[in-house]
Image 1 (tube, helix red, strand yellow):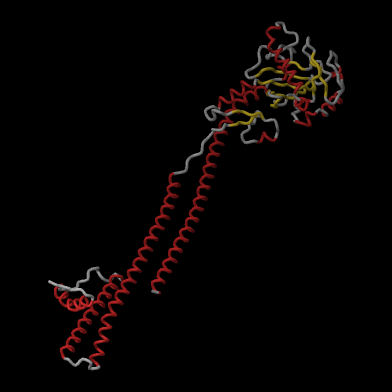
Image 2 (cartoon, one colour; image 1 turned 135 degrees about the horizontal axis):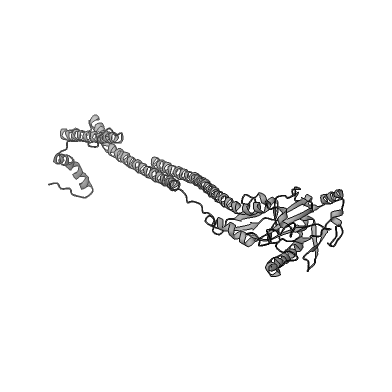
Amino acid sequence: MKSLQLQLKEGKIRWVILVASFLIAIVALAWVTERAVGLEEQHREDEASARLRERVRLALWRMEAEASQVVVRESLRPALHYEIGEPEPSPLLESAPELVKLHFQCFPAGSTAGLCSPQAPPEASDPESVAEANQRMSDLRQLLRSDTEWEELTGFELLAISGKTGITQIRNRHDDVIPVVATDAWASADQEQREESLITQPIRETRALDQSPASPMKPVWLNEELVLIRRVDDDRGPRMQGVWLDWEALEHRLLRSASDLFPEARLEPIRSTEARDHWRALVSLPLRLEPGPLAISSTRFPAGFATGLGLAWICLLGTFVAISFVLLKTEQLSQRRAAFVSAVTHELRTPMTTFRLYSEMLADDAVTDQADRRHYLNTLCTESDRLMRLIENVLAFSGIENRKSSGRIPIPLNLVEEVEKWFPKLSEQCEAAGLQLEFS
């Protein structure tokens, strides 16, 4: 009984250890799975980001090719093209180039030129031919007056407009208000004073534009309009020349050049110098490319990765099932072994009791009748045979467990003789129980 209880206790301990080990394995595999999935997702995101960057670089390269044509063209344009009929008519008088609304230049206070455009001369022979340019000139004046960045870039503040001549009054931000009239005050000023006045201009404080006769064009945003400006220093004095770009047409052309890469892309203006360093920003123009929400999609998990994780989980579950099956079979075998040992012990107890009783009776001469003595001796022989068969069965069982037996136990047996041998004793036991045993 104690042995059976001990076996049951040991069986419970084995199951507890098995379940605990399985839970630990599940937690470990779950952690490994989470880490593997996280690394794979990071890898996929990195690949998607790399593909996106590659496509953005290609799109920016195409846009730069389109935008640089305009910037380089206007940067190489001679300063004389902005003059109105001096010494000869400007080539810009006929019409503005592609993607350009208007060319203009602006002189500081004291100059007789003010704000003017070669496409809108003050005294045109055919006013109707320059009507559109005059309207744009008026819009430009309003634009420059409403945008404070223009003052920071040039140091010139627009004050009033002379409607007949198209000449604008200019105020230098660091001088008093001086209306622009037909005077040579600026031209007759001392060259040293002029240079000192130029140094005080905020242009050097803000953009540090090139002081060459015609510096490269610098793109700036004035409200919602894109303008190219440069500083010119020549015999006529310092002045600002600018190009008012047709932003809608330019944006359409830039986006069309990369429409196969980013169909839903858009261009966002860049108004701060810090944002010009963004990796999606154009170099030639202050613009940033926004690829759109569906610019690029990440790839799926590779088949081998999902298959590997699935096989790992299947192997873990299969291992648990196999170990549980083996443990269950082991417990069943242990129970059968315990039952066999109990049965063998019971079977051994009966012949041993008979041996002890009959041998004591014969040793003490308690049986004097020769017939009874012969009967007892026959019983001892029968019980010894029975004991030998039990021992042989135990040895055969041990051989089966140790795999020393082929599984077939050749035992010569005559069923009739065996029944006749055990029939008398079994009949006595049946009669003692009130039963009758018959054999035919």
